[in-house]
Length: 244
Image 1 (cartoon, rainbow, N blue to C red):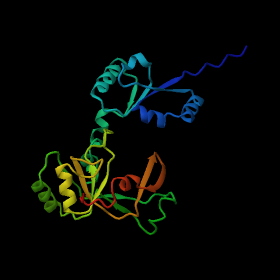
Image 2 (image 1 turned 45 degrees about the horizontal axis):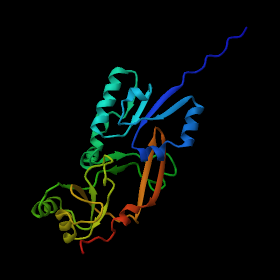
Image 3 (image 1 turned 180 degrees about the horizontal axis):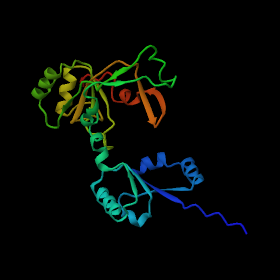
Image 4 (image 1 turned 135 degrees about the vertical axis):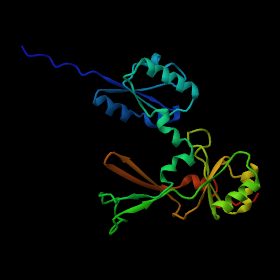
């Protein structure tokens, strides 16, 4: 009599992300693809104790609420085999625009990829140099004198990109504005700047790039690039100069 094959144990993965992100990313297609390999995906409510919502082999989280952090750490303390992606410590440097680019403070040498789609512009090159742009922070409560001192120290020239200092998903963290002149920067410091952008901000020189946004996603040895119109820059005033 032949033995019956053992039923494979279902693996449970929890997603702890904001509700709007959950609706966007936890789709029917994702649930079906996961179920096909015996993985169950559950949305975790960050406002409730994790243990009440299931037993998880893996938790993927992108929430910054202090209460959530305490609840998650309490769960992991009692479930040491649960794997967490990403830990709070691992993503701390990505929460602000000054620290997230720190690894590129000094130029990094990159070798052209073997993928033909990505290497079309690197023919004949043995390597490429990659570095963070010149940037400086305007802190909350800074004065016009602080602003002028920053411009003198960095030698940045208009137009300048103004981006919210924090990148942790809080309200307004995706704002963007192009500041054309000194008057526009003064209004930003006074709190009467363009919609969606307020101190603290990071300033960077604007480099003309055809109004497009380039994204490259890497997963192990695979790479995918995408080009799209930079809608946020248009929305928040491509030619904002500080005039009423």
